[in-house]
Figure (tube, rainbow, N blue to C red):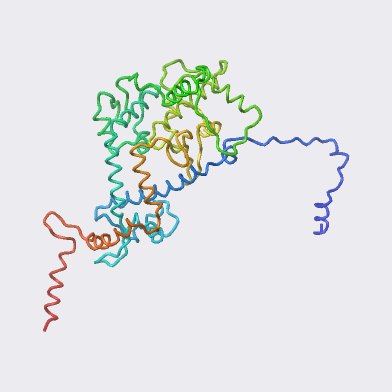
Length: 419
């Protein structure tokens, strides 16, 4: 068949034949899945922008961690850093990336080896040390967070592997196994090498964070107890389209009773009247309380999978979060799926900041300064140049520096050259 015939049949299709005239074509209903909900959700620009900025800070902290792990000194050559690109997930050349953040990285020429090296600036190092100091000062709050997590679990136990992956979000120190779990033996007990259990139940801590909001709504807005006893704070983003009957369904869902995270009741039977809705609402309450216990009120969705079995949340977490856009917000920035507690943020910042969050925010502000010349950077330029000439050599216990063995040979060469 020639090209003109093909175009003719495409533009002017042939009439239906008598054999296909009465064949019905079924209309396919568009599939609604977690992926389509994720793609069609209403974006939150402030939270997406914050997430992209936090990924930059995370990359900077990973570079600092690799630098501090080296024993030769607190500096690294750019040649070695270029080999770490796959480990860091860096897709741009190392040199231009480091020079984009002069407030964080100091790029200098090694005085002896004459190669380009890099190290963390004094200001950034101070903020990293300050974060560790603040985390130690907030030790009692960290103990309460771990204790509430154990009280939420079904058996009063948690795996240490899950806590290790969650330690930064909970504000735990690096050595939390010894400094917290081992130190507070009256509250925690290590059953196995990788399992921690709760020693004693604390009734004062068995109150969810959302209960404060409910009490405030009941006392200040004069709402009935029927409306606030099982309700959650809900706020939808700008541009959210309400479907027909959505507000009525939401109103009924807010009134629906459920087993609260710290209550010890029978397992909700799914086949009973309203069993599925109550089971999912309890899962929403557990995730809401878990996010409330974190320092920054945000966490990666993949990390929540480590608590599903311990907390009795046997549901698809991502789909559950997408079904409640007024409580949670999912951000896809940075190649990971991160969930924010919507009520805790306002214009890209926490409504009620804590000391650990403020320290991390100062580090983020230092990263976001970029190449902008500030008074702090101008004052530190001269001191950084002087320090860059001192960093090169290490001194051992006997007072000898690395490379001192070559000095006698150089002195002999100078004596032989002299007439």
